[in-house]
Image: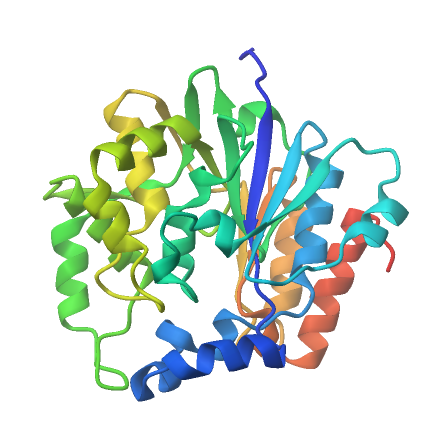
Length: 325
């Protein structure tokens, strides 16, 4: 059994429904960005309360976590009463980290509406533990998680698989244009990460699930590569020129012999209930019931789901997390 070290969780969150956020973003939106879901579409910022369920899943299924840091831009999800009501005996602390703190010393790039820029800075959070786990607010734990599901002594558990850069670039070439540009895909930023490390043949493909991180690895890398850091945080909206920081980090860990590759099969449940068949949600929930190994979940674009599908999924999360509002 690996020696247990302190573990923090970092969650990036924004409530794009507020008039203040919309007004802050408006002056920087180009006509292309306004029309492009992959750059600045509303679903990238809309919130239907996922943060409550994401945080509750840490309290419920990862009680060994020391602190949860929530990255925001002048906002606060106001979780205190909810946590006190549902987890009154927990020692997990919550701390809000504003963009002004995250980007300190680089205030010239603010405001930022770009998750890839934000993810580049997570290691800069004050008082962050060496071992931390990064989540988006639509990531959830759906069964108990152990320390060893993320960390193994000085190594990390790397959920994912290797893919060919050449094959996926060929697929990119035949991808149709949309709103005047090639859509900025999830895989593309991973390939860019590999290329930043001079990899020509393969890259490590991640899923939309929690990522175990080592603060010192990112701090040392960006200290030696300040231009890479600066370029990746300089885009207000998502850009095809940016790399995925987590993907780059996993490659660094593999190169150091400190990553244990693990399949996501039978541990990860992914849902995107948008324009799916009538039985899609029920089928996914049956997968959960029938596979007791599933412990990580992402529900993408829940704001775009039908009212009924959204209601069913949130009720399911509420039931397995044993929470009340």
